[in-house]
Amino acid sequence: MISFSSESADDVSWRVEIPVPGVVLIDVSVGSGGCAVPLHWRAGDWTKPPLDVSLSAQGRIEAVQFVLQDERVGRASMRMRCPVTQSGVAEFAVDDWAADRYRDERVEVSAARSGTDELVLRIGDPSVDLEYCRAGVGLLLGFDRDELAEIVLGPLSLEDWESVGAFSLGG
Image 1: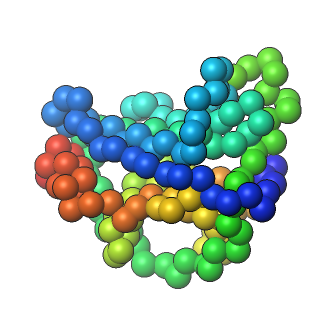
Image 2: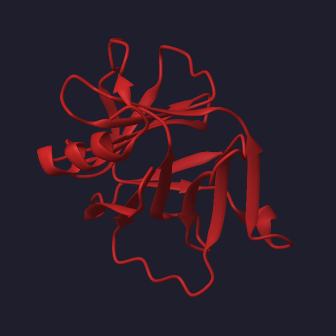
């Protein structure tokens, strides 16, 4: 379950780094962060490190980490993005997480480059009609029936895209 507060959206920053050839690490920081014991919602097929969304104890996104591992980032298929319907802070319901800091979901996570140089992370097989929330400058969250279904970051710089392309499979 997701709720939205009318607070202003957080500051967003990201970095793209290459720890070893064939691996690209994309780290996104949202707001001031700094939760001592964050919660982690992770999604992927576990053939590589999963998409990791780090949440505060109140359910606010603090960070996103995504790893590209020997894979090519292609162009996103063109689909019309719905207009942003919310702007502010998305808060995930985490009340029932007390027993476990991690929620893992086995689902395909794919990465693509939009025509406007954004990195689009699709989680599962979202519908066409997503509801978007602007979580900060350069970060959109797309929801499908209150489930996080898409993360849109950017636009990334030419240097960031060169890093992604140079070290991905076939780059």
